[in-house]
Every structure is written in structure tokens, then in C-alpha cells.
View 1 (cartoon, one colour):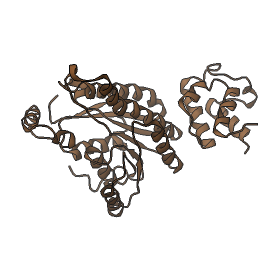
View 2 (cartoon, chains in turn blue, yellow):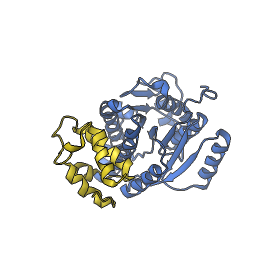
View 3 (cartoon, one colour):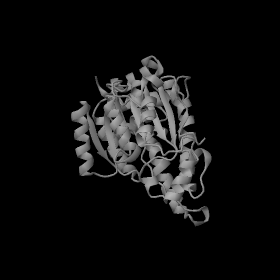
View 4 (cartoon, chains in turn cyan, orange):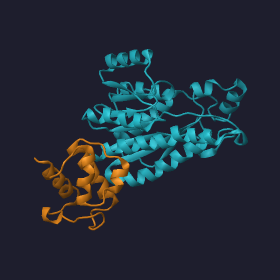
Amino acid sequence: MTLKSSKLLAGKNAVVTGCLKGIGRATLDMFALNGANVWACCQYEDAEFVLHIQELECKYGTEIIPVYFDLCDSNSIKAAIKTISSAKKPVDILVNIAGMTQDALFHMVAMEQIKKVFEVNFFSQMLLTQYITKLMLRNKKGSVINIASITGMDGNPGQLSYSASKAAMITATKTLSAELAPKGIRVNAVAPGVIKTEMTEGLPSETLSRLVGKSCLKQIGLPKEVAGVITFLASDMAGYITGQVIRIDGGIG
Amino acid sequence: MTNLEKYNKAFIDAFTLEENKLAGLSYQSISTWDSVGHMSLMAILEESFDVMLETDDILDFSSYEKGKELLKKYDVEIQ
């Protein structure tokens, strides 16, 4: 994939959650490469991440502002929103990437675990989306991209909490797209399959091989391959696309 | 522009109304103040007064008069 010269997001301002690693980090990198200014949201401050941001700013001439908050803490989310809104810049793009999983077979999963996964993967993202889309309403335009998962469409043994929370995200994407379209705001989701991140690095090699073997391409996906689709959906090139869930799974579905 | 002028302008812009129709105006009493119009009004008020309204207050914002009362919580006096 070559996007180096396209600058698909030149002059746009984006809020991206989960920027510390994995798909979030790859999205931050690709947004900067494509000329976007980014409020890079992370759960905690990290020296390596701060250095990385500085490198991106120097390399691409965009502005990257780190914003730290805990998705389990609504007051911390509100404080982050105040930071973002106080900048008095339009917010053009929101990418909800931060998420968690707690895998366990259904009869071995505590209700509190399910609630925690939903809190991080769904409720907090909805709260953030409420606030950010209110800022987008001022300008009557915007693009929201939610990170779902193919497990939210197909299900997966041992991942009830995660897959159900992602299914909620998919339905929210479709409903929000219909509600916000008259206000110029597009809402889409991507549904990654097996992607090389910390989440999959912890899997036993046999399990990983079995999952990868389900895909037509017979290879694991890379975070930058998800980031590429997110970048496209965020850009004006996707101006006629809303309410869609795009699978990025190497051909599993 | 005074706070009252800004407050009135938000309603006028959001609902395309004459200023003399504002007193006594309530949610869904006119066709333009539906749920979509309500969110437009909230967006204009947030920008005009540089506040971030809580969801509960957005839901409680049921009339022109009630809005003045709610904005006091955000240190915005409409007189």
C-alpha cells in the first residue's frame, strides 16, 4: 500500500483513541503521514510514545497533541474533551480504537468481567462519541470510524464479552450513521480479523496458525493494513460511504 | 453582545424564529424544535457560551425559560 504522496487528510483535525500501540499507533502514524493534526489519546503517559510523537511532528509537519485519560472514568473522559474543545479547532475525525478483551468460556466468565469489557469497548466509546459529535455538529461535517471486529459479526468461542461488545459497536455504527447523516457526519466501522498486535501475540502458536489458516490469504494482517482503511474512511474520498462495516480479515468472511 | 442576545440568537438561528416568539417556547411546541433541532440548539449554545452541557441537562432543557435556569449551572447568567 502506497499512500506516501496522497496526503488524504491534509488540514484535518482528528481524535484517535488507543494510540499507544497496535492499530491505534499505526493509525496515528498514517494520519500524520497524510497530513492530519491528531489529538492522540492514550490511557497513560509513556516516554517512548512522547518521543514518537515528536518524531512524527518533525517528519510530517503536523501537530500531534497527546491526551491522557482512562476510558473507565467518565470524569477523565470529560476532562479530555474539555482539553480538545478548548483548542477551538474543528474536529473532523474521530476514531474509536481503544479496547480490551478478557477471554473466557461462557460458563467461566463473571458478570463483572462482561460489564468491564462493555464499559471500555462500548459505553465509554459512546460517551466520547456523544461529546465529539456535538463538536462536529457545529461544523455540520465529520467522520467517525469505530473499530469493531469480525467476532462481532461471526462470534468466536471464548470471546463472549469482546464479541458482544463489538456487535454493539456495529449496531451503534449503523444507527448513528442514520441519525447523523442529515448533519453531514458519516459513521462507519472496520472489522479486523487476525491482526498482528499484542492481543494476538499472546495466543498459542497453534491457535494463531489455525485462525490465520481460515483466511483466504493465509497470512496475519498488519496494523498498518487496518490503518489504511481507516484513513480512507476518514478522508473525503469516502464522502459517499456511511453506515458500513468493512471487514479487514484476509478473506475469512 | 449580551448573554441574553446570544441566548436568543441561538434559538432564532436553530429554529428560524422571530424574537417575539421566544417567550413560552417549549420543546416540540414548534415543528423545528424536534430532537434534531434540539441538538442543533445545544451545539450553538455550547459554542456561544463556551460550555460543555451534561447529557442530563440536555434532556432537561425543555423550554426557553428552563434553559436559562440550566445555564446558571455553567456560570452563564441570562438576564
